[in-house]
Length: 141
Image 1 (cartoon, rainbow, N blue to C red):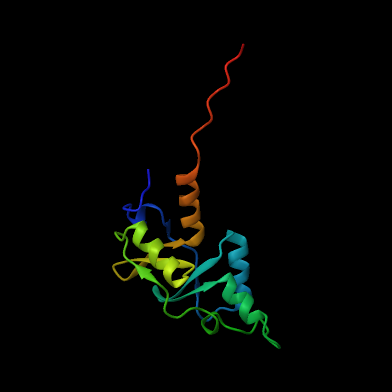
Image 2: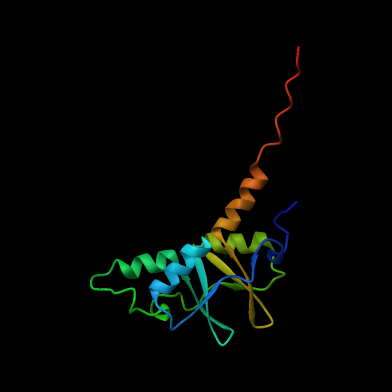
């Protein structure tokens, strides 16, 4: 059973889908759609440079005269994403994400991206905790 003391490594999405910072917003949107994910870690040479969310893409694409085939990921990404180590507890990560309204936490290990933990992951954990026990079976008469 997962609780607030569980290390984030136990509930993160390991080896998250990534994108390069020189790729376009169209490339990013396509990758998110193909993998059914709302966040991409932005890497260059294996190092984290930012995080791009669906919200980031929507915001930039909503501006007048923006061509998503021309705008680069690095122009829309969050440049200083919330980073945590794999041993940080879920409770601490969730509290920080809620306090700062972060949509994700990038889990780093030895300078590399090990995983990602998103608000969807947090909500899935909450749903599991709040799920009622199976209802008792009705007895036949």
